Length: 527
Ligand SMILES: Cc1cc2nc3c(=O)[nH]c(=O)nc-3n(C[C@H](O)[C@H](O)[C@H](O)COP(=O)(O)OP(=O)(O)OC[C@H]3O[C@@H](n4cnc5c(N)ncnc54)[C@H](O)[C@@H]3O)c2cc1C
Image 1 (cartoon, rainbow, N blue to C red):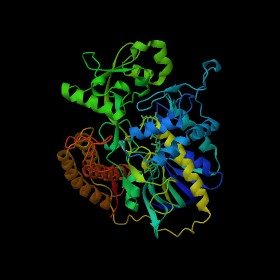
Image 2: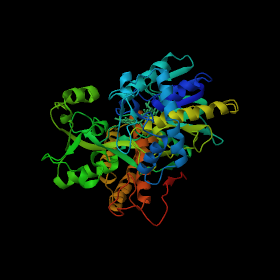
Image 3: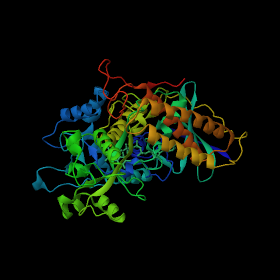
Image 4: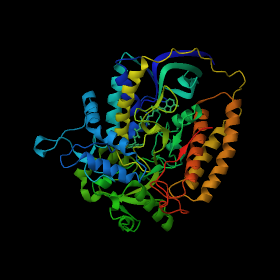
């Protein structure tokens, strides 16, 4: 392997909604490098179906959006952050539209500009969408703009493996160039983690393969605090089909009247929550989990066929087409669905500018813990968070860039002590094992005993993985496995520390919120 160095004003690790929104704003003032672990589009953003939340309806209000977000967050939202994000909703949507994102407009006779969906937790229709492919519309526009910008350099199939700090300040990252099989040094006056979430730590997930928690792991190793990792959102409805790889069935279907059914055709959600199918996701996921376990069933059903063929195809064309591909016709029948890990509510602790604990290191989007979601994320607030925090970080970085100290020279990546891997099976085996026991022991319903089992296993595996990492030449799978094992450990540790059920963290040992103490974040600090 050879080495080479790259230098930019700002290094952005990740090319989803958060990373590219930031890159486009900074590029007018600074030279920006964006690196992406796969093709630029490949991230959660591209697959987002439901939409972006914002107060756009005359009947709706900023206060109502704030209150719904705080209610869903079960006592752990930071109210100033919620206000900040919600108040910037309309402006952020305007920015996306100006950029060219095509949210279809309604005819003037409808009296409102856009069709808005309603999703769980929202008390109004406020989810702006581009049919059921909102993420694709956003990501494609951001990508086209990014590729056309002369001040942004894009590095696809480059995996950041560790941040580089000098005197407490982040000065870049080591990056593995997958195509040329070499580690490069990326030096930068400011570095931003926009690496998305960690859904791949679970066996069943709606997340694409890139979501292995790399940013959280890198930030932790660099000395940043990580908070609230126990709050993993399980999406209640992914298509149950061997080849579908947990294809998500958007919550917007339930917003438009889709019903959850048991195999005998009866509804069950009202037994669990008066809001029925529109209860928050954690409630719906737990109800499904409960019914599946009670009946020994692998899935329940979701039925929207009563809304008629035209309505279903018009509102959900992409979901309809994918279901047809797998042999299910949404317009005529109920489809089998299961819950799957969907969103990482916890992450790298940041302030309202996206700053982490390490100087010149920022984190934005799903990798971060800003305080917006608290113990549970309200649907469609996350894309909004990406755009709002990209703008906040842009302002802060721009202010500080001129004062950044000169970059020191950095050492090359040293692999003189490592050999070619002798047994790749170690990587694939450990990868499968982590995802399986995280699903079984640290999933939708937890107990202390299950968590202790998981803790024991992750420690054994980590010893093996770290030893392997120290002895053999790295590749993409090994980088991801090392990060996945660390993130699994952080989730287990956080879950063990929370001796109550709250939001997305549900444990049979403490089935209610602790009334004795005020709600507190679980903040882990690297030693
Ligand atoms: C199926 C699905 C549907 C969703 N629907 C909605 C919705 O309707 N509304 C909503 O608000 N939210 C939705 N979400 C959540 C939302 O899409 C994400 O929270 C959001 O897109 C995250 O954006 P991001 O920029 O933080 O990360 P991502 O879009 O996930 O991008 C992460 C980027 O980081 C890169 N990366 C990761 N690790 C490395 C590394 N080590 N080195 C280099 N690059 C790296 C990846 O290559 C990628 O470019 C959905 C999520 C999924 C999975």
